[in-house]
Image 1 (cartoon, rainbow, N blue to C red):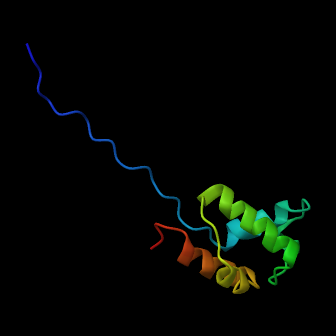
Image 2 (cartoon, rainbow, N blue to C red):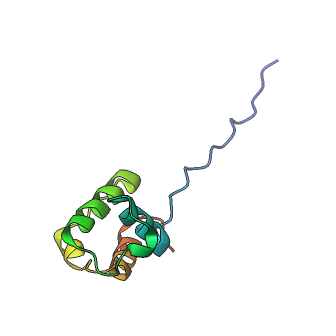
Length: 89
């Protein structure tokens, strides 16, 4: 007996949503093992480098110079990453 049933359809892997404010604050807090409450709104150069590393590792995207120049605060990071990371709404 020859079964001609089609193989099961495998859905594409889910694309993670861009990080929100809480996730970005958590990443920055991990730099230096600080409580989230100590994270300032303004992102310094070391924090930006750490944030870029986290984004590249988790989302396999690279930020260009224009995008990096636009990130000065946590709010900026949320907005830029929402534009850059595929699959955002």
